[in-house]
Length: 233
Image (cartoon, rainbow, N blue to C red; front, side, top):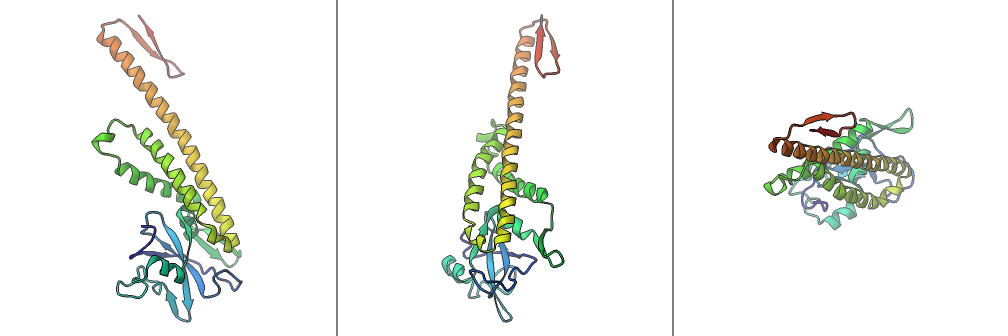
């Protein structure tokens, strides 16, 4: 669950983001940890004091008998605040910091990250809508139904990401990536709508042709360049 309690699994980002400047959280926080077992991933700040790192010393999961595992979600947020959710969190986890350029670099092509993220949630939706009661719904219509829900979820997750504004450059890059993802969703919706219309038109053609054959009509069916059918007796 988004609350991340009682169990979280972490994937630590590959850069140390604290560079000595003042931030809301101060110099004790030095890295991001992506929580990968939430329905929609989010990022926690990790906390450093000398050689000790919260939440769990860079382990993939906090020990079940450890102090962090026993904390409530509110108490965890006091120790290691959440700062970014959803696609923006996955995008940031895909970055590394290049010391030569003094800038962030994407480790995987953004279009690949976008498609992987989208396909993950589309598959979850389709897997949960494959029963007999959905058998008469086309794949195109299912994807349109998914998009209608997914767009709202993505927007609400991004609106929660205001704590990331403390890291101006990262917020700017994340906002750009978020916009790219939303543009992808809009383009995908148009593409699927066109497929759905074509599928519906093809079905109507098939019905008309079948009826003509069943009635014993002597007809010639010609598919022209526009995809329409001409029926001649």
